Length: 254
Ligand code: G
Ligand code: G
Ligand code: MN
Ligand code: NA
Image 1 (tube, protein in one colour):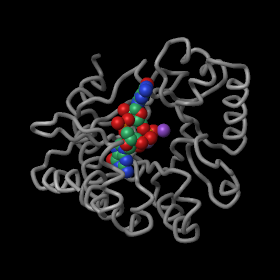
Image 2 (cartoon, protein in one colour):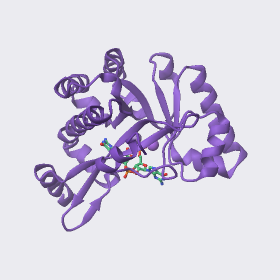
Image 3 (cartoon, helix red, strand yellow):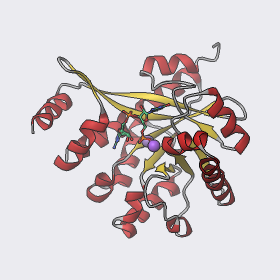
Image 4 (cartoon, helix red, strand yellow):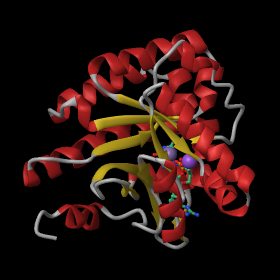
């Protein structure tokens, strides 16, 4: 596959980078977290979306070195910000189900935290429900281990999969990220609003925080605030930012 060969070169040539998209607390307006999002700038073809290359990375196994790299860079970025400002929003990294199946994710996270000398509370791991549906015992042990060292766990794309929720009885997560399709549905119908309200009620009853994703308008932000959503992420507040731009918006004199 031509994209696989291109991706191998991208790794060798260090053409990958991370962007950071803030998640702001709706009560305080503070940036509490930021999601690390992978970017690939090809010299001729321009930016290639992770939606296009992650599936190929997963099927070829390239996701394993890429995933390790993402965790390392996220830790380094947090340390840079901590060194400069004394505090840092928690950095959330996406970890693919393939990494959970084929890699010692707990071992890698511990190693990178130690190498960077980063306190685990500055890291969050985003997983999709697929991780909890496959290889459940091993995955839950890994997630439990991450929580024990102080890394938080978020369920990404919530509301798009089976959302069986039964795993929540066996295992505590820290955060649910409501998929942007539900934020769109919330604007279109009272049913959509009811679903978002129900997710918020359930999550809060279980002491789970909620980020709504794909918030593009002030109106969406206001409705989510009224419904009691904790944090929002989306183009309305900020697009994913380069490391430099991200550091800039965190500057205390801004
Ligand atoms: O940033 P963007 O909307 O283009 O991301 C598209 C998809 O790629 C999303 O599903 C997102 O979760 C995924 N993605 C982005 N960065 C990473 C990453 O570092 N690792 C993994 N596994 N997926 C990522
Ligand atoms: O699957 P995951 O939630 O990790 O994907 C996050 C993706 O959503 C990223 O690719 C990011 O670029 C994209 N994204 C972030 N904010 C918005 C938004 O407000 N609207 C849309 N359409 N996409 C967004
Ligand atoms: Mn995500
Ligand atoms: Na999502």
